[in-house]
Image (tube, rainbow, N blue to C red; front, side, top):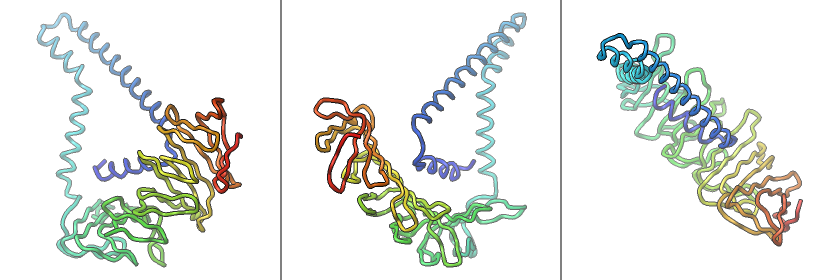
Length: 311
C-alpha cells in the first residue's frame, strides 16, 4: 500500500461518525494479547530448539537459536525493505508532465505533477496537480484524483467555494468528493470551511459533510472545545438531513464539563452527557444527572420553550 492510499484510508477512519471508540479499544487489546501469546509461543520454540542443539558446538548452538528467534523480525524487515525499493524503482508513479494530460475531462497543462497506475498493461493517470487553478465545471481546482473503476472524483479546490449551498474548504484542508454528471459535478462530500446554520444547529468549520445514494445529507463534527446546538453544550455531534434539509436525526454529547438546565444539573466529568433529537422536536438527555441532589435517569429538553422535565 502506497503512502497516499494509506493516508486516505487513515482519513476515512478518522472521519467515520459511527465509529465506536470502545469497540476499537477492545479490538486493540485483543490484538495485543494475541501478539503476546504468539511471542511467548515463539520464545518457547526457540528454547526447545536451543535445548535440541545441546550436542552442537556452543557457537553453532547460539547462532542457530538466535537466528530462529529473530526470524520473524528479519522477515518483516525484508518485506519492508522490498516494498520500499519496489516503490522507489517502480516507473509507475508521480512525474512532471512534459505535455498536457487529461483526467476526468480536465486538461492539466505541461508541468503538472501526474501520478499513474498500470491498467491492462498501459499507464493511466489517476491523480494530477497543477500549480495554477483549472476549471471543473463551475469549480476552480488545483488537483484531481480518480481511482480506476470509480466514478467519484477527489478534487482539491483552489480556495473555499460554495457548492450546492455548502461552504466547502480548500485543498489545503481536505479534498472534496464529487460525482460527474451531465449537468456538472455533483457534491458528495467535503469539509466545511465556514459555519453553516441549519435550524437550531450551527455546524462549525471542520464539520464533515457526506451525501448518500438517496440524496440525504449527513454531518459530523468533533472538537476539543464545546460548541452549542439546541441550547446545549456539545463537543461532538452527528445528524442527517433530507435532500431539502429537513432534520431526520441528530445526536450529540459532551464530556469534561458541567451545566444546568432549569433545576437539573448535568455532569460530564466522569462520563459523557448524551442528547438525542426526538421527532416532536424535543431532546432526550442521559448521563450523570441530578435534580436537587437526587439522581435522575434522563431528562426531556424542549429548546423552543427552554423547559426541562424528567422522562
